[in-house]
Every structure is written in structure tokens, then in C-alpha cells.
Length: 473
Image (cartoon, rainbow, N blue to C red; front, side, top):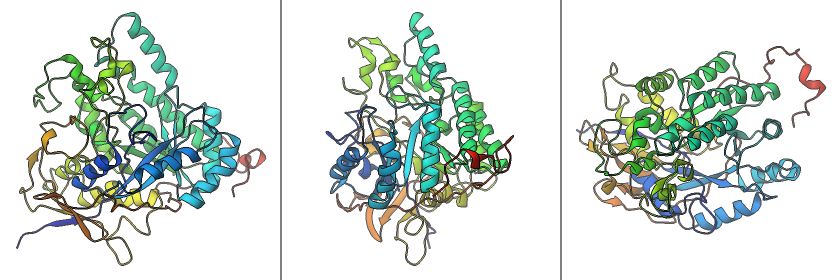
């Protein structure tokens, strides 16, 4: 009898989809809800949580949420929910709209940025958001990079004419992520707020996370497959980190690997993150799926000035990865390798790709477990090496014209994907679920999975916060 492995998979972030074209504001040629969720189920993902983004000038979050409901409704192959990106945290939003989002819409996670001019918040506003989300029990996600460091480096690169695709990795050095990670942790510690540091790419940033966790602070961290498998040489184009030729003939093909934080330079960086995975420093591994078509003047080729001169600052950030996330990770876990060779155990694979995400994002009563009363979301993998394959663009289901993982061999691929007990994907027959089968998920409050609140901050008296911090509701 064949031996198969049944696993539950939920909750990775499909990127924000714009209100006009179902696509990202900064990547109008990328996935729609239809193609993105189709790709998700083909890769074994049963639930996505998309980023609904507030623009800096907007005084309310509600129009963005309404637009996302309209675009997603009837178009999703899998179950879905929303995070909200908060770029203009007015008193009205913090005091009135965030509670309403949690109660009426079941949106219980907020993402904030420490970089990107259209999105970044000052430390003061970050503290306001952290305190309010802490009071409401909402999850705060933080993109941690030092904006001024990056700006100074880019100024120097521009003056010297170093604007090719590879210089994107130079423009956002590890130290910019390291400093911002430490600062985000310090801000969270000041106000006793749990945070999730998203798409961590630096081993030194992980050291800050570990140090905070060792003091029992509620500091969670996320990384992504591209930071575990790919290096900055991808930004030079033509071949990937495993030496497999992409078939590209021009240097600008490196734009396909532009993401932030960027891919790092040294194989030691990959190993440092894998050690963090093995030691459970990371709470979740998500895709950060942010697709933009390459061969299109409105896609990655926005980075070609007058169609000829590369300027990495104009390239839309982000890479596709929703379909390849689970096969890449499963390929390196005990489901495919002996314990002595596996980079993560089978329980760790399930936790970091499924059950932890369900708990953190308020779906623990419905997703992330195989038990009575839970949705029957299952992924059945091939026995042995029968699911082995090369990742190739031609076999993927997304709406993008490339994959950064082209030519990488994985040891397995989802054989069947079931959502709520219904078969929606068969590796031999493709997508067999219906568009619109996916349900919107009103989420509850997320759990703290690392450390705990109520810790005394370093250098502060036991009750010192009571003299200045608002009482928690």
C-alpha cells in the first residue's frame, strides 16, 4: 500500500489587490484574485490573507476594505481574509475604525512600514499603533528597514551611475534591516506590545529576535522561501542560485528577483536563516507573494527608463511564490529526507506553514488542525519520490510570466488539495475546484505564541508604564 502524508495548510499572504484592476497598486500587471488563488490551491494552500492597503492621503480604512470585498467576492478558489496596511493612523482610525474592523469584518491584523515613502510611519506613530492594537488584541505586523539608511545609499548609487538591477541588493544593506529590527523590538518593549516582524532576511536580525524571545518578549518573526533559497546574484539575471540557467539573455532579467528586503549576498546568509528555522526562531514561513509581470512596460520593465536604461528604484518590488512555497519547504523536511539530512522536522513544517499562522491570525477554531469541528483542509503528498519535479514556469498556475525558482528541483508536490472536504486540485488533472468556492473568513483575535505581555521593560520600574500609558481595554 502506498504511504501518503496528509497535512493541513493555511494562511499565507497574497498581496494587496487594487480596487480598480484586482491587482497591486504598484504592480498592475500581476495576479488577479482568480489567478492568485488558483495558484495557491495548486501549491497546497487552502487559505490566503490579502493585504488591503490604505493610501497615505486617505482618512479612512473602510473604502479599501469595501473594494477588496467587491473584488474578492465570487473570484477566489480558496478561503480568504484580509490584513490591513495602515499608512495614515489618524485618531479616528485608531479609536473608532480599528475596533469596527475587528468586530464587523473580522480583520484583526494590521501591517505597518518603517520604510517606503508612501507607507512609512514615524516611530511616534508606530508607538500609537502598537498601543492601540495591543489594547484591542490585534496582531501588528512590522516591515523593518531603516528608511534613511536606504535613502543615503541610493543617493550615492545614483551619483555614481550604479542603477542596474543588482544594485537593488546594495541599496538595502543588511544593517538597515538589523537596525530597524532592533528598533521595532525596542518600541514594542516600551509599550508592552506583541509584534510580528515580517519577511526577515538577515541572520543578524534573527539574533535580535532570539535575544528578545530569550527575555520572554512576545516578538514573532516570519521569513520566506526566497530568503532561504536565493542569493543576490539572481539580480544579475541569467542563472539562479542553484546554477540552473534561466534562458535569459539580458542583464535586466535580474529585475525578476527584486524584492524588499532584498536577497542577500552570501550562502552563509541562507544557512543562518535555516538555522533559525531549525531552532524555531521563526513563527511562520509565508510567501510574501507579490507578483508583477516581467515582460510588460507596466510591470518589472518600469525599471527601464525610455525602455533602455536600467533604474532599479523604478522596478516594482516583489516576486511570485504562493504556489512554490510549500513544495520548496516540504522538499527539505522529514517528509522527503532522512532526519539527519532534513532542514526542518515534519511537525515544524506543519507549524510554520499552517497551525501557527491559524493561531496568530485568529483562525485557530476553524483552520490549522485535523480534528472534529475544523474545516477539512488537507494536502495529500506523493509517497516517496513520485512527486519530484523541476519548478518551471510552464507548469505553474499564477498570472505572472516567470518564477524566480525556475529550474530548482523539489522532491515532492501536492498530489491533492482539499478545502472544507472538497477536492479542488488534483496534480494529474489540475484545478478542479470552482472559482468562487472560497469563503471570506471573519477572524477572531490572534494568539501570542512566543513570550508574553506584562514583562517589565529593561531599565524601567515595575509600574512605570502606569504613569503615562493608557489603560489596556
